Amino acid sequence: FLKEWSSSSSASGITLQITPNLVISDLNLELTVPTDGITNFIITDALGRQIITISEDVTAGKNTCHQDVSKLAPGLYRVINRTGTVVTYNSFVISR
Image (cartoon, rainbow, N blue to C red; front, side, top):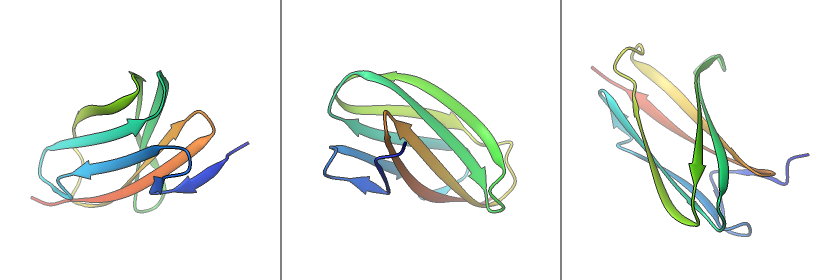
């Protein structure tokens, strides 16, 4: 059961930021969470195909995950994050 689906969930205290938005090789996923736990990131392509899955231990506050995306084709991608029952998402573009 999903509690919420958005790019920022202020009610749950969970936010997902992606930098840079226009990526060449290194993607930074910045996740702020209210409590310690495990979070999952799924990177999908423009067709919704799952490309990368990442599972990370996070602590309360700001957490950063770095991901090498240099082998992915240029285009639009989406990051879906699931932390507990909250799902957040954001998009980025790979450009060469």
